Image 1 (cartoon, rainbow, N blue to C red):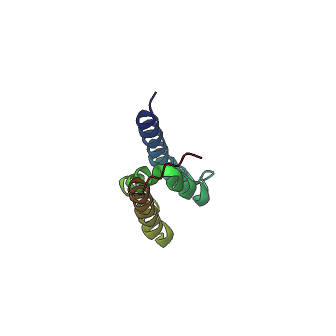
Image 2 (image 1 turned 120 degrees about the vertical axis):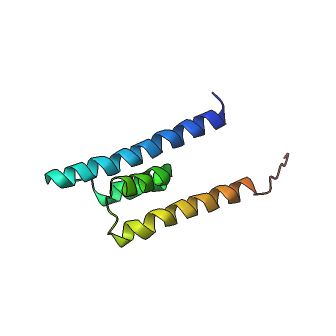
Image 3 (image 1 turned 90 degrees about the horizontal axis):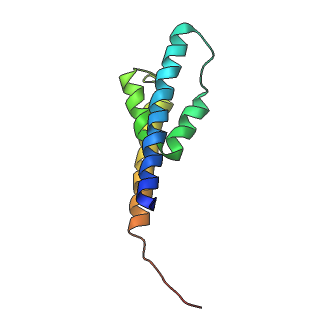
Length: 97
């Protein structure tokens, strides 16, 4: 398995998890059951699931009144995009010692 396939699979899975966690937490909120901690939702977004988390937030109409989510999730996504762009445009230095 090459690196691109591995990374693509990882990001697809982590975004599906982020999406699903938003849906599960919304369901549990309606049932007044044990909730998924907000820290967990943010951690999943930070490790690559920001697109799925944002999609789940608006599709399930969950956490859309919380400023930390409304502004935090897009901020995480923008930071991740900036990081990817920086890594892709970083100069490659090869040295043989």
